[in-house]
Image (cartoon, rainbow, N blue to C red; front, side):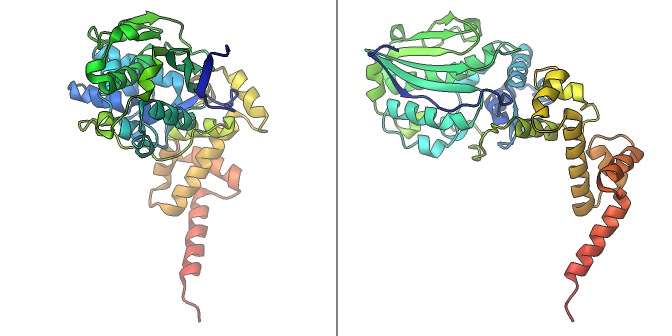
Length: 356
């Protein structure tokens, strides 16, 4: 890095060995745009094992490649530039993490700096940074993994957010010739994109270059708001950095699916079963053991807290037969599901009995 280049902020200490995850709500604005175009997102999301419930749940994390694939399916069903359009119309105070804090920004530079400090808690595999080199500022993102699926639509969405923000802040001073935009697939941008043309680059991230003087321009909260957007501000649940924790999150999201096998779990992680088990071996476990443990934990919870029949509980944890649940449950806990439920009920009754 030259002496003339100054890094304003860059997330530090990222864990590159963790499972590449991002909050599922990143799909929210594009799903909302899909509905505004009178298209049902259920099919496009279902192709990738997702649901609208997941997309609206700020505690759900999914692999980046799943996001990229889902966005591509949505674009195939609607229009190629839907992600960029959704980015342009996103309410930043509701969509971006800790929007209330971002809304306190005084200048454009203040906003970018606050954002880069916050966003490291949203993804464990993608980082943002703001740099200043002489008269130019650079806002960039970089992936520390090689995507299995093109991130073109994801980059178009993010670029839609940031170019539109610059345009609103500059207002009558906007000069698109001062902006140099690089992203992996410029064809996914609208034809009229505030006069900005994209330059093709690799799939490891996008960059926006603009005059450094723009960073000192004042920013007002109303420039960040889109009242037509109904995405709630995310709750503050940080992205899991631990590989096992990330894998457990993915398994729980598909726990009721009988098709959740070890090979399917590996596919969700974009790796082979051999690599998955090798990574889990450092935790003293395997993919099969994790899936079984989480299914049994969920089954014991449902037996204790719900009125579901044992057959229904078997289905809710991805087992098609009651006998399969009974065998697995007995093997794990040394007691049948029926006896477990009776024991828990007796203990609850004793605990609730009035003292003599």
